[in-house]
Length: 297
Image (cartoon, one colour):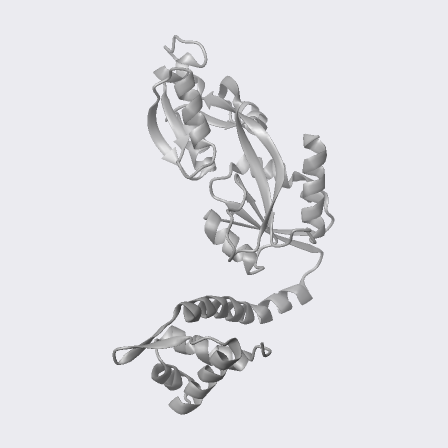
């Protein structure tokens, strides 16, 4: 196959975004024939037809839709390149851009990133968001690593790799005022209390549901939260008892004054670092993985 001509790819990308050769030519202020020729050159180089007739207009073929997705990523990276180079040239110290899945407990994030705090002149950039969106940002190299409560799903279009960072069992907490009049011992007392739970998008939710069922508890769920920090805030305010990892114990009991209802070591949250390389190159991410492996050994 011939080397890819990025000028041809660019004209195709504009035509795909604009919905036709004529609209692309208008946007580019070029002749329709010129744009059409460039697109045909790209088709010849790739060996596949990228557009097909659809009435009086054209539409992308399956090959064209795939090419358009890759072109979108390529030119988004191109648009980000000047700012990234400028930032890298002016930056001091080590930069670490971390994507944090919104389902991941925030106190667990602090625990996972604690070893990085020892890095001299570290510049830590944390971005919280939807797991799928963060993986796309990682694949585009806008993030150095993504922290999540699950490994990346198998997807041939996303070349990312999951690395285990450890695990933590879950315990239940509540403010003392909420426990007045509660008669049962743990875990039976959970049937008497309003409960706050992570949403079903969270990997740990199904484990919690199974654990409650095994203990014969019919939960009164009064709130479900994607954001674990918001869940803990509502719990602290007295809306209900809630689960959190053992790593949160000191913060929730000593700092926030919540009561530990009990532990359920059978329910475990797993944590992963997801990178764009099988062999992690970023020195701080390597350090995090090594220390996580040592602490779990």
